[in-house]
Image (cartoon, rainbow over all chains, first blue to last red; front, side):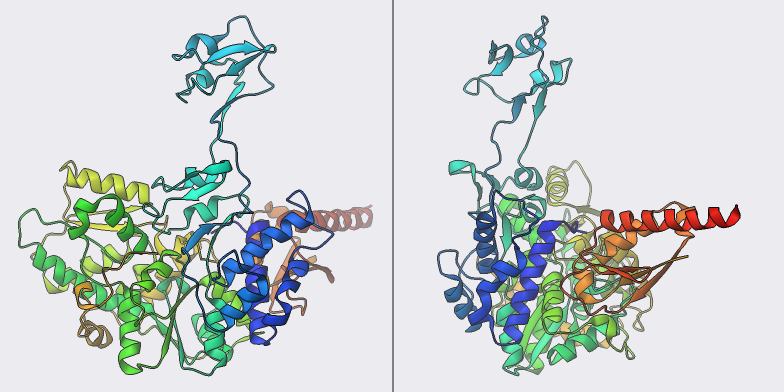
Length: 506
Length: 87
């Protein structure tokens, strides 16, 4: 779970206040009040002064409204209220918030004693170290950041520092730009959200469509909430799934559906595709449900692009079913994921909006609804165990293997799976080089799978257990026998069948 | 006994109730035994969460540290009473 630090609290307070103002119809007039209610004169202070904090907060609010940074707060609020979503990247560095962390990787600290041995000077292969003002000095123009000096110092007086955003990004997509501010390279970025979670200044933000969704609800349109299978336990460990459905009804959603039903259909179709592909010798196929993983393969391992399953994700499959039965319905996918915001842009006619669980909770609170006070009703998952376990690492693989066992038991599945984009990349390279025998691969960008995504509210280890319990209790025992999955499967779930599959992310 | 009432409501959940539960779970067994932990749905103090009530006194914007501090004081008081009663 993302640690609930001050940054998390500020972000959630901003989202909740925006939601509440939107529901109450006073966002346009009151948006600037957030600057005073969230950052109070009494503190706590984490920047130089209250004015800097409020300047940063303005950027946060504009990002939460999906508006560019160069408009006024009122303009941003007005645009969001009319439904506008600015064509800005899904995830971006808030210019004022980035604290310009130091660039120098190796720094000589006060602990340097200017000793006689001078192991640092002796260790440096580039002769970059000399003694200046009674202390070792590293000449940055010569230093190649090899780290030998750090290791050589008997006092440990030379430290290595790295920028948290850079360290978190396993695809080298973020680095210091002009004036030391972080810059995202969108040619490499897959919007996984790792840098956002890592930045101790909260300077990286994903844009939110919370206001745009509330406006559709207030207009009394038929807005469907489509919950990712990781929803179990997100609103409190003791909250029952039925209570969440009741809460969403009370908030004004027309209906709430489970993405896991789409996952059932994807498991069946993916197993079929795998069986078909495995007739060719040396075939190798990866899963396609994690958009950050798919993005990583497309942008960083393009030679393996064709090995990604041609199936749409469970989100798209479940949304297709809603749109088929109710073409005027508005589909709001709610999940743990930031990258889904980018994936949804490829399917503008199928998925209308994407919210994280965090954003949905803020929306619920903003509507004055408390999930713990709702009736649970009689609720059972419409999906089988197979679709429900997509939420946690290893689940997609397990579901596909279950289906294979029933539909094509003669096909041998030699599977590998990884969590984390760096791990996935490394493992795929080894498979491609023939160092690791495998014909099937499950790729998950986040540790723990979807339950470990950047938009969750509960620790992934807890959610993993809750998801498994919930999946085990599902009345439908298998994706193959679930009639619902058969119906969705008939909609044509291959990406080549859907119009916007090839448009770029972001 | 010390009564600890944690707000489980959605607003407080967003602001960190789970962290408070984790810190209570991690207390040494002999301290944990002195606590009666209850969940409540709302203290009508939303937005200033997470809210906890310890022996009837509301602690708003609670953090693991601030909750532990209050509990420590309550436990010391309780032990003081038990000890003097024993003498």
